[in-house]
Length: 327
Image (cartoon, rainbow, N blue to C red):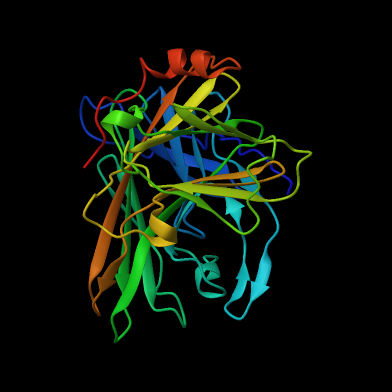
């Protein structure tokens, strides 16, 4: 699948400053072939969201540098209409199903701006009955972005689902997933987490590197057969490295909860230059009218060189990663 890059353009005067003394500004930018997307910037990083479709995050990147999120043209037609992957970060509900998961998000979204937060709410999905919402909040300084995902059940019956946060990344990089801390056999006799495989997963594929501390998935344009892997991720983070930029997303894990996909709350799918870095919330039963919220925290680190071995990767990551998982 061809990956295109999103380039942000200034659209004239700043529309709003968040508050006196704050550094976050809101203006308009062009992205994903849309001329009037909303752009939050604090001078270090910028976040761009479209309002003509979604809810999506189209761009997250250091100001003046490449978008770490990728674009994905094309699409497919299902019984629910034409679904377009487009790219960026989107919200689904697990477990995956056809055509339910591929409900189109091609219509304009309801937009609300409050301080440094842009909230995007989709109309109720026809025939599916779930309403999606994404809210992005940019810190006044640094690279931290809070991404809140909300699913609401607008059907007259209970629905079991999980929030599924899916980021299409710019191709050519490496997905990095943490292993559980190593403990030798005499001191730990029980398993510590699931490693989840799909029917088309081939662990002998050269894109996979599985070491004692990290699982790496390289994105290789000439390897067009799909691969997918999932883990029960108690460490609460996953990363993507491309060039010299490291993207890290943090998310909670609940030991008492039940997760979809054989207990997987962190997954990656790769096919050619197309790559997704995904996290999932717990499975839960949503009663009619009820909603559930799931939060990711995003960070960018420039000038990171991970090298070609697990030792060089570990040396690069250890100073940057959180000591505790979010709850």
